[in-house]
Length: 82
Image 1 (cartoon, one colour):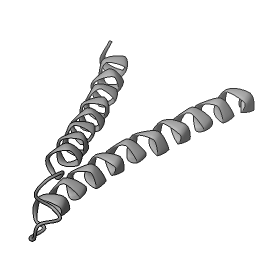
Image 2 (tube, rainbow, N blue to C red; image 1 turned 180 degrees about the vertical axis):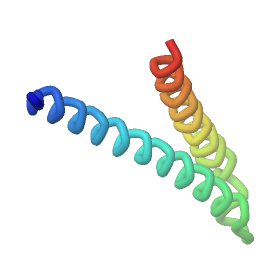
Image 3 (cartoon, rainbow, N blue to C red; image 1 turned 30 degrees about the vertical axis):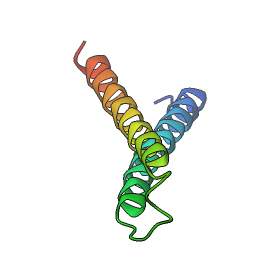
């Protein structure tokens, strides 16, 4: 039996990078949604004037991160099925 160690290492490296990248994107999405909930939940005069901008940017960034995660998962399923 012959094991191709170079191919095994390549598969390990690619799967490690893809996993860390996907988890990182999902984490950024969660952080973006938590930042938008944090800024919209503040009370007082300091959060009323400029809170719409960061909240919208954080929420939009979170949705982009979640969309990229969904696209990566869909592409992985496509590779397996095809």
